Amino acid sequence: MALYSEKVMDHFRNPRNVGTIENADGVGEAGNSRCGDIMKIYLKIENDIVTDVKFETFGCGSAIASSSMATEMIMGKPLAEVLKLTNQAVTQALDGLPTNKLHCSVLAEEAVKAAVKDYFDRKNS
Ligand code: FES
Image 1 (spheres, rainbow, N blue to C red):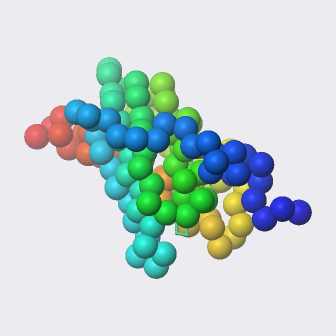
Image 2 (cartoon, rainbow, N blue to C red):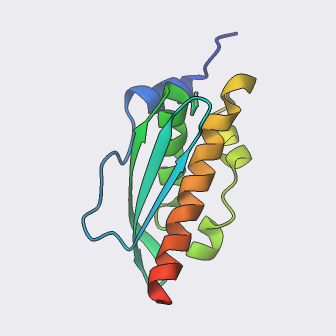
């Protein structure tokens, strides 16, 4: 069996929603100190719904595939649903990741949640 699924390779080679959002409503960052990879998620939010999402990932192929998949999973979704995103769901949507690459999907969950938290922090300040 190939180490990486077709979906991982597809999202690694053709990542969706790469970039930044000027005047984003929420920005979240997550990093892993062991591998040094960093992921940043930008959200545009209207009426508590994600209307645009972009990511920048300085990291491995699995991290890029995870962030790309995570952006597709939260686009157009209400924040209550976005906050339920788990790294397991991202991994499953990618048809799996090698065990030593599971932490890459954790970055996606953490960065998305950090971006939503940033949105609420800004709203409440
Ligand atoms: Fe650390 Fe992939 S090796 S995020």
